[in-house]
Image 1 (cartoon, rainbow, N blue to C red):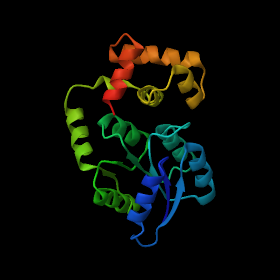
Image 2: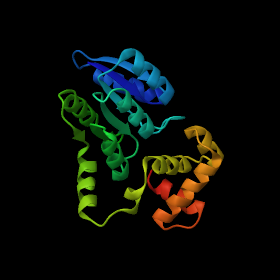
Image 3: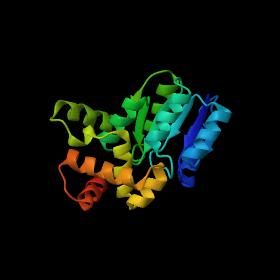
Image 4: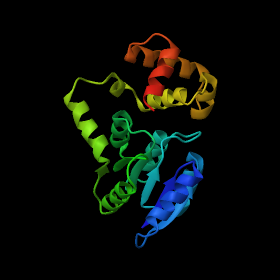
Length: 203
């Protein structure tokens, strides 16, 4: 099976390559950015993609959407530093087949890859438990956010200015500013500083 690993950290890619090297019939390609991932994807046509969310330029959630738009059969496992259920829920809604955080054990990532390769789905155990609890509890305001709003919130948490966010996601500054106002309304906060605080708490 052809697997594409998309992550901007060399050490992570090297670690995953070693981890998967023991699996039979696996050919691993790598990409360090969203743009590079699209190019490799179009050339190699992998059957499974291991996808980080924190990517420069095209963010992970947007890349997930684009990959599935190009090939609805591709299987995507999000492999992210974010262990919060909001990110897992959004990725799964967009069509990801699995979600594993980078704080999970190596065996859990291997299990996820094997399960998804076999046609199944896999969500890290702790995240799956939190997702189930969130669905049973009162609606989390963060669940109201769109994919773009989550991406902007993530970039705010990374320390990006509104101008830098506009450049990163390819929209006008005014669009980012207006979206921030919408996010504030949804989350019940008044200042951009409050949005940054919320985004930092999600990390």
